[in-house]
Amino acid sequence: MHFVGRIAELWRYPVSSLGGERVDCLDIAGADDASGGLDHPTAGVAGNRAFLLFDPETREPAAPESSPRWRKALHLVSRLRPDGMAEIGFPDGAFLAADAPDMDKRLSDHFGFSVGLAETRGTGRSWPVIAPRYTASPLHILTTASIDAIRASDPALALDARRFRPDLLIDTETGPGFVENDWIGRRVVIGTLEIRVSEGTKRCGMTLVSQPGLPEQPDVLRHILRGNRRNLGVYADIAAPGRVTVGDEVWIDP
Image 1 (cartoon, rainbow, N blue to C red):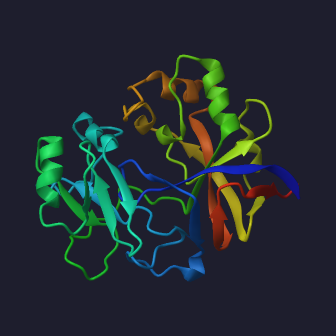
Image 2 (image 1 turned 45 degrees about the horizontal axis):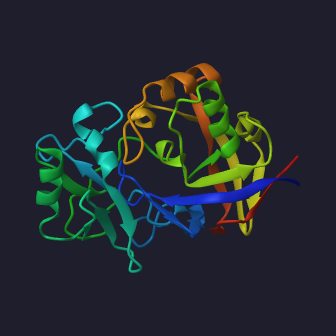
């Protein structure tokens, strides 16, 4: 196998469309380990996108990439408590548990219209269950080389991993270039985790939305479209589950 880099950042997104939490390690389940629910995740990162925001009148999930009224979602963050319960962080620094009685009011005050919190898979708890707008791949991978390739096309762009929402950010030792394109169809090993890269990641308007410390920049998506046919990063399926830690070496089949 060939050494391609090391894990630079790991991210988890307990609430879809919100900012995530940067962590030191991730447990990644395979399809055979997954049974659904908040405590038993689908294949991929444990706890990822177990919740989403929605409009109680239409039951439509939040869509920051296409609807300006939802763009404040990127100014909220989500994290998991040790017991597996999701929490949402607000701009004033306060975190509120998903089951807090005033959660819907806090969300509605933040957005300026009625907003609710729902689960994406049923656990038998009190939240409504609403299917996500798309079926997420088990794992989303991005390299520093690809970010640098976009930055090289326009140094004025404010770029970091938060714009692209990867689960794994890999620090590669090559120059700028969309190196992940060559990984599609190949096996990647990171510690005890084995994955197979399945396809490129098509980008949407989420990449240009403002976040704390990052301005709204439509040119981000334009440069991804021109530079790599709208792809940035790759998706992967889980061949063998495992734990991934920041600093782990990343190896790929030749």
